[in-house]
Amino acid sequence: MDLIVRNVRLANGFPGEPVDIGVAGGKIVAIERGLAATAQTYDAGGCLACAGLVETHIHLDKSRIIDRFPPERGREISPMQQVAALKKEFTVEDVRSRAERTLTECILNGATRMRTQVEVDPGIGLRGFEGVHSLIADYKWAIDIEICVFPQDGLTNYPGTEELLVEALKRGAKVIGGAPRYDTDHDGQIRRIFGLAREFDVDIDIHLDVGNTPEAMDIHLVSRLTEEHRRGGRVVVGHMAKLSTMPPHEVAVLARRLADIGIAVTVLPATDLYLMGRDQDHNVRRGVADANFLVEHGVNCSLAEGGREAVAAMLQGSAAERPQRILQALGQCHEALTAEHDMSMLPAREGQAEVVEPVIQRRTGDADAAFAHIGEIGQPQPTRWMLLPEDDVLLGPV
Ligand SMILES: [Zn+2]
Image (cartoon, protein in one colour):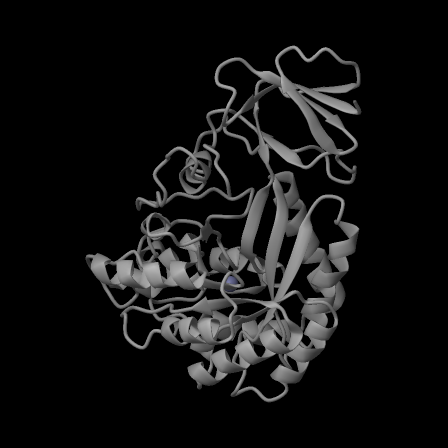
């Protein structure tokens, strides 16, 4: 054996006393108590061992711009316009260094797979793509990074964007995304994204259906095209805040359709809690799709917090201007989050990932709470797993 991790707890199958894990040739070859073998040993101190975490939705190219982004005042805000102006000045080196800092934090907190959104358009060109792409090989020892290129500021209404998307796909972007909300022609953008996905045989991951009412939802066209293009299992829709404005029996019908077709949903609670409900000054809606409900109806779901730094920057404004009075954004490692709102999304249950609530607990003032780190970055780790205090996170298949 090459490595023995002693004194670990596992989520399933080994209740009670800690066990030892033996590794040979990069694979787990033994799990038992008091493993009788000699090898390099690491004492996990009774922590929980689990598969690495998956960051399904992050914007590395826009992370850590909090110091360049004056807080927006009032209830009517437009974060994309502010960032659009900023990103003209982004250089490849600037993007890389900011992205690298965030990536490092993600790795140290247990992420071993990541899909990062990266925007391309004539304003940023391919500089964001190049800056993030340069990190893939350098950090391959620790994390698999997948780039999803997408038009943040419109596709059909922003000449030159499509050519850049095509170029990024030729250069190795594995996923095509979209943001039809910021396009004058929602349907046109969605159809073009499906066209590009077919042309380059890549997966699709679209920001979709953020809004205060269930009207004019784009998910219906995305569903039809996923069927027509036979891309079930290769399409993800992010946000879906409009689901929170629909009665449960209607969400159930839609959820079963998504499950049948093979469309997954990524819920982004931090962003949506901040952005939604701004039309209400009392009895404010949460605006967050109920991931638990979707899971119960067979939909493959993940939780993520996209654009964390941008959200954090937005949150610097007056507390009274925030619909749900969140004090800070969830996501950045060193920033505390206090939510005066019940953000628990997934009640703990056997076999289901429960992440949001413990993360918030850890960020709400418990000075002893610390994020589990897999080690010092810069040194290749022999096997990809992470260790967490046993009662920190309940784990299931992610
Ligand atoms: Zn996003």
